[in-house]
Amino acid sequence: MSEVHSKGTSLTELEKAAGEKMSSFARGYYSHPGEGGQTYRDNCQAFKRYRLIPRNLRDVNIRDTSVTVLGSRLDLPVAIAPTAVHKVAHPDAEAATAKGAASMNTLMALSSWSSQSLEQVAEAAPRGVRWFYMLFYRDRGRMKRLLERAERAGYAAIVLTVDQPLFPDSIRRKPASFPVQFSLPNVWIDDDQPGPLGSMEHGAGLAKIAKEAATWEDVKWIKNNTRLPVVLKGILSAEDARIAVDLGVAGIYVSNHGGRQQDGVPATIDVLPDIVGAVGGEAEVYLDGGVRTGTDVLKALALGARCVFIGRPALWGLALNGAEGVEEVLQVLKHELSIAMARAGCAKISDIEPSLVVHESYYLYRQLLNHAGKVNNKIVTSKY
Image (cartoon, rainbow, N blue to C red):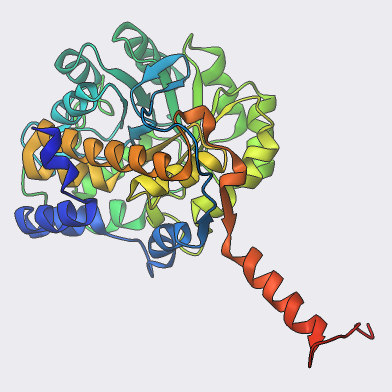
């Protein structure tokens, strides 16, 4: 894939092309917004409510988009979020996604719901930076074995999703027929998979082994039983972020599950500043949800994110052209970020400061004050 091709492409165009290539099942499975779709839509729309205040006359002829995340140097502050069953999008599945991420020297978080084992993915992209998203299980022995496998396979961090206290009812009550057959090797590690994926038997089996309503005690146990740093994904509350930091969690991953869990929660970009403030620099902060342009990335970084993650866009690239398609999505965002940085007066990531971004409400508030304080060119003082 050539960089020139990426420069003339946007993620909107890639999404449209992927939609034409995907099966109807894949389109529905990956794009499902959850419940009414309010949060799904607001994730993207919220970015547009933030305005950039560029600084001019700075030397931005050469830009450096590299960043360090939990000690790993990445060529761009955009990583691949953990998403399920990539085989629905492409036969090469998660191995291709890992190759695409590695080709751009960025990280991929592998889901426990992947259609390939964590070892297979590591072997496919041995030079890539990988994190492993692990489920909470009733049997801590199972968790311990998975933690050890992730360490041996060279994963750099453990991600725990904390915004899924319950599996969707559909897992137990509504059978689904996947168009391709595969197992979940990172879930069924010591036992046979009970029935095909999507069946009621499979859902019942998951309910038996997974601990859905995990607690802070489970987080403590995992942190104490791995040498790897622990990242909590699904944090939307400043209070939870503070608790996590006090427990020694290394990364706070601001996410609302792409709107697929609880509809009606805030857009991630809107809660990011409060969480960054609560963390106080004692852990790295990441964000996913609604990132579609390089300007979105710039805004998230200005508001305190160390890097952002993309979920659905990576799957669009995977569906289009396997590993090269994933690479193209990342290349688009890297190019757009580089241009946005130049226009904002930033030559490197450390130049991106909070003063670069202001919420649109700031201007509305000033307009209202100005309007309320002046009537017929006379200054009016409020009687209240």
